[in-house]
Amino acid sequence: MERIAARPEPSGKLSPWRAILGFGAVSLAADMVYEGARSVTGPLLAHLGASAVLVGVVTGVGEAAALVLRLVFGRAADRSSRDWPMTSSGYGLTAVSVPLLAITPAIGVAGLAVACTLILAERTGKAVRSPAKSTLLAHVATGVGLGRAFGVHKALDQTGAFAGPLLVAGLVALTGAIWPAMATLAVPGAAAMIILAWLRRRVGEPADHAPAPQHHTPGARRAALPRTFWLLAASSGAATTGLVTFGVISFHLSREQVVPLAAIPIVYAAGMATEAIAA
Image (cartoon, rainbow, N blue to C red):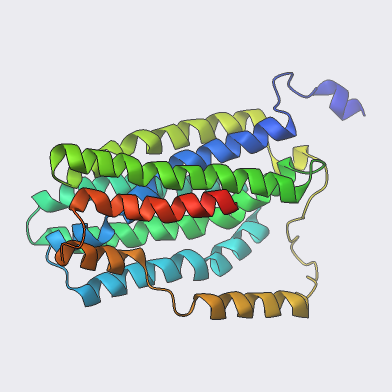
């Protein structure tokens, strides 16, 4: 009690719902960035000289990295308790990698290799931040209901996933090129980083909140994951086995001129809108 009296809680500390909405705003802005880019990944790589096979490999490996590497970075988050730095670095990778795609058409033969590297870097950023961000969100949501909190957060997240492709579609229609849209996505990327920095100051560390899922402490024995978890993981993996990345779909939409270039992000946005409503 003496320690608490000596260092009182800041009067400006956010309430749980304001913190949840803050995390949702970060995800909304960040989703505008990377989902906006993903809506035209196929046509961008095609313009740089990629084949359908290369587009499939790069986007497929990218999605695998965004999901499988969470095993690595989730464990690291538990062991290090560095949730804020990992969340910030993951969002930072996205905020930097996507706008840099704007330069790839201007650097000649190296453009394709650079674009592939940036796409993989952005997906790796997703893996870096997701476990740590979910831990932070679980802490601030303690007492208000994890299901409701994650539902609201996901709805805001998907709103950004819908708005980003629409922004890209408008810029492509206006300019006739993809690179100006990639450059413009630096704006929501910067907004995500600014909101995140503000949120860190106002929310504080997870230890400042009521008990929530705890980090692994060195030397402590961890409980095994239950059988139901592994069954759910296996069913989720089986359900996604036959999915094709939108990078491949957009590549063919562009190459076969099924729809105009500016309409391709709108096709992607329609899918994201459906997911936002479901969330």
